[in-house]
Length: 419
Image (cartoon, rainbow, N blue to C red; front, side, top):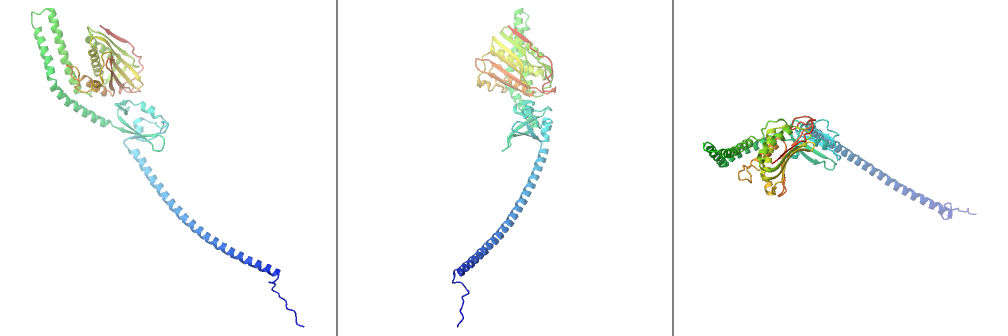
């Protein structure tokens, strides 16, 4: 009997099929694992390369950043050195108006300490010279102000420039122009001087006659005096115009100035119904300047007002202090006023609307006021009178440039002259 053959593979049975399927799945899983492993390895290699590249870029950026910081530090040091050696002052102001930084020159100009102070308060303590962008320092120097924004940051930067020398050169050039104009004036006014001189000689010859009675002698004497005074004014105008800007300055009293003004102006109002008043509302009676030159300015303004009024009206001269650092003297009348066209030219040398005028009175007045670091202007309109205002800067702290403030009581008296 032949032995029975057994099939050990079992693949044809359900159990064999199950084993085959498991082996197949295991094989597939190994293939998937190998593929994932290869992908992970490649991703790791790519990531490692990217990290290396990022490290290189970071190192380059860091090197560039350090280089930029070094350049900025060098630039900052240069700017700091520039600010220290700059001949002008630099002040930085924040959006609240407080000074947050400045260079040494600004400290020398404005006085230490500055940081933490309000810029407006520092600026208001400096008298204005001609315009608000030029201020007078306590040592007599003149500085020019230039303001600029801080770009995207809130606040401003102020540049202070010493323009003292430039102003001196400008004043010298103005003086040379005045001398040139003086030569032209002497030639143009020769006939004006000759006419009153001839009249004065004629009146003098009449006075030498022995048959004159008392009334005629008095009449010719008055005429002679008028002509001589006219000649004196002509000569004084020429001399004052020639030497403008060279005034000596000293302390003088406002009340005494007004007293002299009344004494000089009252005679010109004799026989006229003009009320003349001087009122001093200035908190201090002491001023530093050239009293005679300012007196001449006021006399000229009052005489112009009297001529404008003619026979009846009023003239008032008032001293006041409308602002803490300014003295104002106004000369007002209720005359016919001045048109805008004439008012625009009244301070020009040799411009006049009077037949016997030299055109120098108001030009001299403007030069005198400017020599005191002040300003003068006219407010007028037809049929409403005229007011000439003179503003002179005051300096706090007892420094006599341009004014010496003390604690004397205010002078409030009035002088009346009605005829």
